[in-house]
Length: 126
Image (cartoon, rainbow, N blue to C red; front, side, top):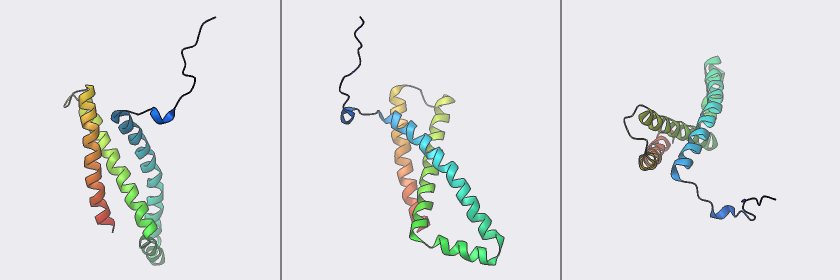
């Protein structure tokens, strides 16, 4: 009989993902958010272009705090997705290396750039 080498009691609080894994997961999540948001934003654009009443209704919708927060979240997801995509393209084209250290530094740089641009997007939205 072969003894299985699996953990018996897996404590999820002790598992820590590396920053590169977090960056990869967030890049995928931001892509899904951006994909879903395109449909919502196209609906809002169609509403605003449909008639004068539609434009006024779309304008009223955009003055809501909740909608502004959603727009800011969509912009933040888009910004992160672009930063993560540029990071991957730079690595794929060989402009930056593909070592673990470079991956870690570029992931942190993508987080920092996203945070700065997200704050600027918040100022723009509000």
